[in-house]
View 1 (cartoon, rainbow, N blue to C red):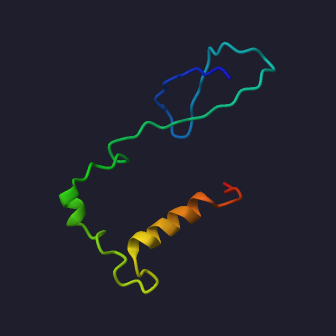
View 2: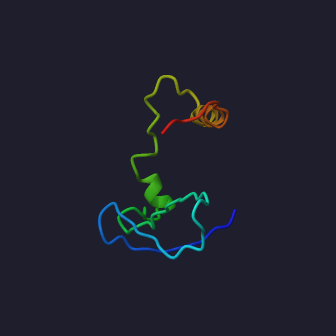
View 3: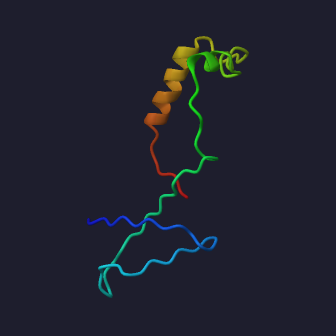
Amino acid sequence: MEAIRLKKILEKDGEIFISGLPYKKGQQLECILLAKPTSSTIRPNITARQLINSELIGIWKDREEVVDSSTYARRIRDEAQHRTGRINS
């Protein structure tokens, strides 16, 4: 599959116009749009000290089903990696 990269800035909400493509009538094309992250969608880097001082540390301490957080997290990761079926969008 051949790929062509075009960079466009939307001039109107929800609309993009592309012309001058090197394809002929009747050819099948697939279009994938990737939005460039904006400053509001980029998460800032966090230091280890900030993480330790955040509310994330100890988040599972009061959960009765979590006796060993490492084992619990490993089980959740394993279950997620071995899921079957497809997600419908």
